Image (cartoon, rainbow, N blue to C red):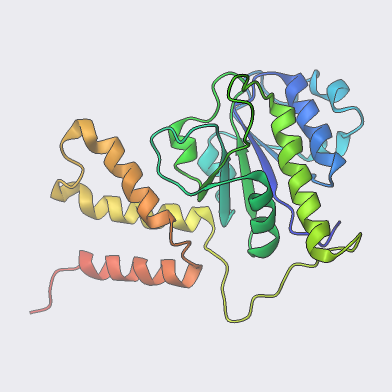
Amino acid sequence: MSELNKPVIVLVRPQLGENIGKAARAMLNFGLTEMRLVAPRDGWPNPAAGPAASGADIVLEQAKVYATTAEAVADCAHVHATTVRKRGVTKPVIGADECGRIVHMQAGRHAVLFGPERSGLETEDVALARNILTIPINPEFGSLNLAQAVILVAYEWSRIGREMAGADGVLVQPTLEDTLPPAPQEELDGLIAHFEKLLEPRGYFLPEPRAEATRRTLRGLLTKPAWNHLEVRTLRGILSALEKPPRA
C-alpha cells in the first residue's frame, strides 16, 4: 500500500470529535493515513476522537490543523470537493469510483474535501476544487454521515487500485513521460490573485453585487485547464509584462 498514490483527506470545519475519530478509522481501514483538519469547531486535539477511532491512532497523531481550506490544500495539485449539489459553482462532476481512478492515474498530490456534518462545504470551499465528487444515494433519504462518506471514497480508491494492479497486486504510481503534473494549489492561487490585481483597477469586478460571482467564474476558468508549474510561471510572466508601461 505504501507505493500507491494516496489522497489527503481534508475535513473542513468538523463539528464533533467522535466524527473525526470515525473518519480516521474509515481511512485506516483502506490504508489512508494523512488527515488534515480545517478550523475544527471544538479545537484539536479532541479527547472524543481517540475512542471513536478504535485504534486508528496513527491518523489522529499525524493530523494537521489549518485555519482555512485554501491553506490546507496549498500543496495539492488536485482538489476534489464532496457535495450533493453544485452550490452555484460550475465544475465537472465525478463519482467516488472515477475519483479513485483519477488519483491513481494523475500524478501529484490529491486532496478530497469533506464539509461540516450539518451544512456541508461552502461555495468558497468548492471553488478551490478541480471537480465535484458526488455519491449517488436515495433521493428520498439522503442522510449520509461524515465517516460513511469518507469510507466510500477510501474504499473506491482502494478497489480501483487493486483492479488496475490486477488481483492483489500493488499499484505503482504510473510514470508520465513528457508530462508535468498540475501546479500545486498555492501556485494557482498566486496566478488568480495576479489576475485579480490587474483587473480590479479596471473595473472588471463591477457592479459590486456581482463581484463575488465574477471572481468565482474567473477562478473556475483558470482552474479548469490544470496548468503545470511551468505554464503557471509563464502566465505570471505575461501578466508581469503587461503591468509594465509600454516601451517608447
